[in-house]
Length: 393
Image (tube, rainbow, N blue to C red; front, side, top):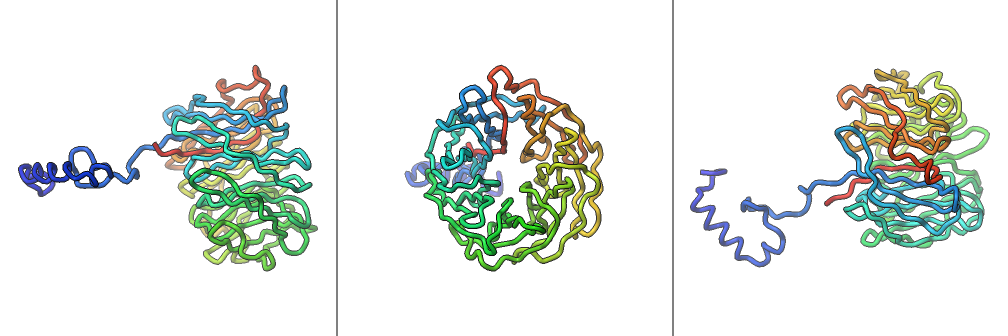
């Protein structure tokens, strides 16, 4: 017997299923395991997507790299150039890994450029959508279900734009222009993992974080009733725990403060921040397991790691091996692979990248340094933004 089915009976059943055109078209598992192949078992390719400024031509370049999980090495898969002016600012990747979007800033000619990502990493231009606003964006983010791209800016009206996305093609709609209540400038945006809420930074004499419920297409249901939590000067760099219970925001003093949240948005409780990290806000990234968070420290060219306190009410202790120091001028951005083992960051001042290894069991940092490949000096490309994309085969 095999799996409680006699071999002879299984052979008869296999023959029957193989004769069925409908089942065969759906893709019966090899070996006749009686399951239908829905594609969920297929392996995925993990890629690093980079956005770069070509300092020679002034164009925006997007590249894909395959991640070698065993050693963290990057192998270039494809490169594409958008016919846009310089000043790439942000990059966002869809949850299915099939689309990447870059925002270039050039005053009244700001655009979002969409690129398709094939399983091979090949890039194709989808479209270019003008933002039609005078104020530069300060943050761009994709909703967790891939339904929309959001851009917030420093204007006091039309400061929140929503570009609805067509999942089948990756195309974006013309922007829905919204004004966050109170006539304040916005400074950053992230989403609850379940896609029910957006969290935005409201800039003022005292910055605050507010939450907004989202509709099915990814746009805010209302902009007139935020739930603010006051803090000092907040930076656009934010991330959210996988369980949605904390929004981690970088402060101007480089400390990271947790804002507590639940299924209804922000709870009004502000947790205990990290201490004494220096100046110039850095990028915050939560590990995929939700146990740790990591932040770049611009003034020291370092990556620091901390343990997450579930209730947020104690000062987060540092993980082992933190900080990791590198000669990475103007260290910018941070991306973590889905395994949680490799952290990548950018060195715009030297036209390079850096990599840090993480112990996935303890969260400790095991060391890191500048990558010899890729190196962008020969091409005069400046890396500006990065993200991890997982594309199903």
